[in-house]
Amino acid sequence: MVNIFKAPHRRLNPLTNEWLLVSPQRTERPWQGQIEKTVEEYRPAYDPGCYLCPGNARAGDNRNPDYEGPFVFDNDFPALLPGSESAEDRTHPLFQSQSERGICRVVCFSPRHDWTLAHMPVPDIRRVVDVWAEQTADLAEQFEWMRYVQVFENKGAMMGCSNPHPHGQIWATEHLPREIDKEDKAQRAFYEARGRTMVAEILGEERRRTERLVYENAHWTIIVPFWAVWPFEVMLIANRPVQMIEELDDTEREALADALSALTIRYDNLFQTSFPYSMGFHQAPVNTGEQPHWHLHAHFYPPLLRSATVKKHMVGYEMLATPQRDITAEAAAARLRERAGERYA
Image (spheres, rainbow, N blue to C red):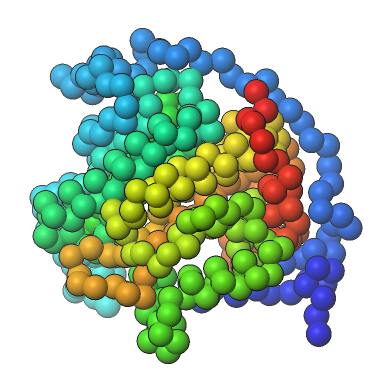
């Protein structure tokens, strides 16, 4: 039997049916290389030049209100439009196009320009959770043609974020996005065969093994998944198999805010930097009836590898063949567990 902690091997992601190459023999210990600290960039609580701060002008004649909590608005430069012109082309089976309607919204998490989720008090994060739930329900109800609501955040310039003000986005689409379509098919097949959600099975096994656990409270569990591609990738999983953010009860929303705080603080503490990532919630499709095979969870994909300045790149073999990692998921989980407590700064 292959020793997965020492020998090269493949791991399967059951949510997408895709494989990952793991090469633990390339490092004899969980971590190598100099850890470089960066001086945290100073940002004021309010920036008069920021188009997301309260009271400031945005594109065109738009101006933000003097908001005191989360603030939502339709993206001034949306990637999707609710009434796009037809783009159908099926004249050749190898060159097809299809129209895609959608809505893009921006969610400012806080009026504080200098904060991130890692800085925010848990009650303030809870208000963001409520907005995510409200927006999901509102979009699904307002647009019957809508099939998916993607809640996500790109944090940090390294992840292409154009504004450091704490914010995320919501894109709602007419069709299932590619990653959702893969997860939908895999979860449906598992549920039909086993009578329980795939994510519940993953969660139960991870809690039994414990080696990839990062944090847990009464309602949420954070793990580095067995098949993680990014060095410090995690999954945030609802302990109860709910399908949508809006279905979370009051205590589950409080616990989600707590888990988000615990995770983002650990990320920042890892290299003593404002840790970049892309994250998003995977919830059930909307306006399609009951989806009992779906189990609410979120993915965090951070790029940092060895320090605040050394990034993991997908190049060469990974772009042309299969994603690969050296540090194991188990070692990454251990490092994140150790970074509990107050945010370093």
